[in-house]
Image (cartoon, rainbow, N blue to C red; front, side):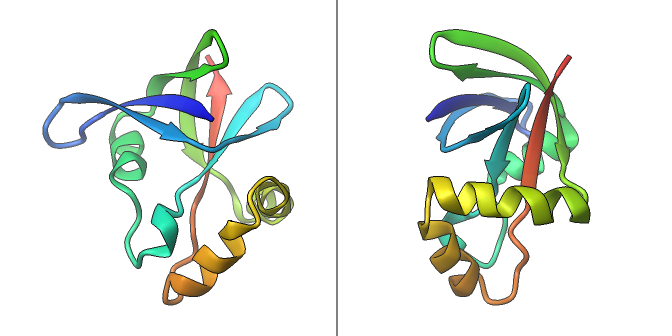
Length: 108
């Protein structure tokens, strides 16, 4: 579990979301599943508007920049996420055709 800080794209209010993650080298990888609901989670929209943020992993706070994974990166990272949390398979089926975004948090 990590703690992702994100700033509201419209409100400007700082929020924190506890999320599952996987590591990919120095990067932290998040899955914008929202439990398989048809729409992306608010934190995903907030990161698109304000990509420079912080994430707490264990006791370490990391300065990161968020971006959506490319198709090639998603293809490589999705199985890692499913290995960490097999429920992502169910979420993808439940999402009514929405491709669940994979978000990469890169150190800055």
